[in-house]
Image (tube, rainbow, N blue to C red; front, side, top):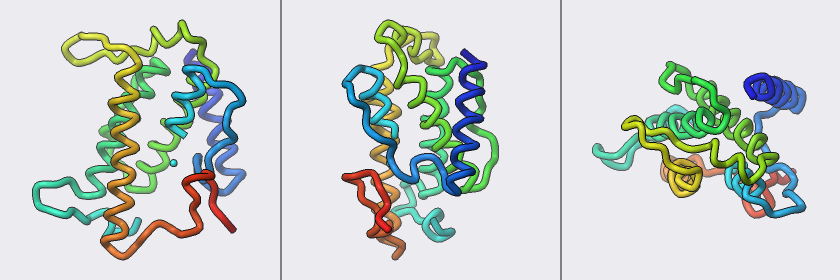
Length: 177
């Protein structure tokens, strides 16, 4: 499994470099079939300094802190699905964190897309208290929370005068020319 993951990560990295962009510049084509894996995969598949520093109140997270939170959540999903040991607390600048988050999601998506239903039993979350909970908790936990925080960041960007480009079509998962 680790060799397959390494191969997938290298392939994705090469493809992203050839395209001159990052994973998820646009959403990949949708699957022709609906399986647990293709649906979970599709859920995973969509700044300036002042944007990163913005926080609406003293009690709330800044955008940079929210990105750290998303990085931690996507790393947890990657660790559970791909069975690799990673350290999301490493110190990275914004662009490196962004790239790592997107690579985490792309790697997990590739595994989920081809996973058989019975393999999802191996994707459990192992909590610090040694409790193990099923993959469903990722859907209503880390994956949904990460999507919610992306909306939060989008809203904060608009507040700081840096809205997302109007060329982005969230409905189609594309960037218009």
